Length: 200
Image (cartoon, rainbow, N blue to C red; front, top):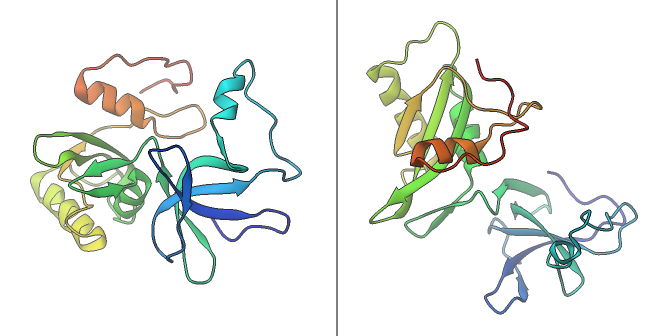
């Protein structure tokens, strides 16, 4: 994500159960991106949802809902959305991180990652993968992708399961709809699909 531009004060914070936030000062430690309120292009509200807008602010900081890490040079790195985070055996896993690792494999054209319930770990990572032309979705490639992800991410973060599919549900702007993947996987209502790209 880079470093804040002049006039923008950013921080990494952790939300406490009391409603307050504490600042994360350790480089590389994950938290939520917060921006000091009052920057010039700051939005002034959600249409007809004043209470929702107020809940985004704590002690003069706007809580973005983006999970990030800040390195020793002050650069911010995107991990995922706080509402997408997968809680697995004490680890907080950002789907974006897992999807990015899978997309590094030459066979993978698209990847979508969700958390599915697990009686021991609370949730485990499941990936849905669409392949590039010329690759066959067989057991050899399945094992190869699992090994690639474990080597790249470590066994605690890598997907436990991978399903091959022809394409992934996306918005018209091309963003994978993880919410829809999860609903279909768990047999839940799909909710609003008005932004869904027509599936092939």
